[in-house]
Image: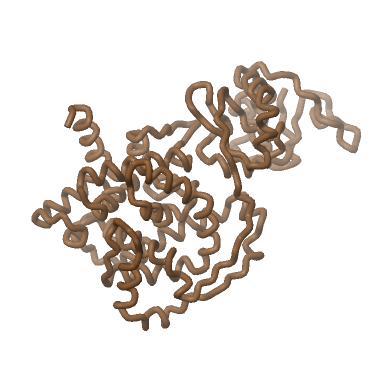
Amino acid sequence: MKFKNCYILLLMLLAGGATAVQGQTGNTGAATSDAGVMAQRYTSSYDSLLNSFYLKRYPRSRHARGGEFNVEEFDAIPDSVLAARLRSLHTVVPMTYNSEVRAHIRFYLRVMSRRLSLTLLQKEQYFPIFVEALDRYGVPEELKYLTIVESALNPMATSRVGAAGLWQFMYNTGKLYGLEVNSVVDERRDPYKSSQAAARFLADLYRVFHDWELAIAAYNCGPGNINKAIARSGGERNFWKIYPFLPRETRGYVPAFIAVTYVMKYYPEHGLRPEKLNLPLRSDTIDLSSDVLFHYVEQFTGVDSAELRTLNPQYRADVIPASSGHYHLALPTSLVPTFIANQDSIYRYSADSLSRRPLKIEPHKRAKSGKSNAKSSSGSGRYHVVKKGDTLFNIAKRYGLTVNQLKSMNGLRKDSIKMGQRLKVR
């Protein structure tokens, strides 16, 4: 192995897993089962997904559930039936069946039963991205289900220890695999780039351990914790034999992966009939050649500001710094031609705003009262009336200010503003 590769491997061993957890190894006797811990992790990520633009626009009350999970009926199913179903799956990763896996299947069937419709919808959007990345790096396709365990397919998911995105990368591991993370961009939330990074990381972990179950466990807690568990077990290199020596969450991680793989295949056998949701999630990406401000994308394409942020969760400040690297913009498919037709104007307006020499923009129309939206009633100073989709960043850039200047001029302590609010800009 070349020196460079040895150095990278050393960094990996020190950096910890993509979703590195905190805790002691061994059985702690905690009240909540390992299955319960993983189910709570899924539920937390899922619940934050309910704040997305699409689910606010298309309320969940319209989506009736089509089936109930019956716990008693599940408990009556013989182990031999569940084990046979897992054996029939065409996977490279061993679908081991034991009491731990059964407990996780039970938990995931219960917690996912009311959420299955949205999970299946998100699957249609993201799984093609995952499969392409996994295939490129020789990682088994079934590892796409790790994202359900990790984030419930929520690109905005953030764990209590700071892991972010669909694949829940920690800061250091994300940077190690080329994901940009700063005040403007967080590529851990980019579905495309984070999937490529996750596939590379999983492939590297397999090259270290030569075992997919250990690679999956290492993705959660880091190679260093796996090596410690191997040492404490007397040199065993089987996940189930080092199981007692692993961090608590990691003990439940591989069983959770097996359980989710089972649920996504066999949920109909357990009486679950999710509704077909027809939310407009079709989108496409455009490679950018210059910096872009979200404000001008909204202005020239008509895309809703909340939808634009939902489709591009990796951009933290409503600006894409494309002049300094390779970046893309995701838009509803129907608006891609509109962007292309107006891209020169979007680039030009964005460049002028970012250089603090904003182009002249046509004044706002006068309000019905006869007073200008841009002037104060007293005539002293200039004001902006907040419209739908406005942010402090967009307003500040429009008038050649910084966000701090705008907040100071208006005595604002927080970044939140309301429609109809009048902000002094001169």
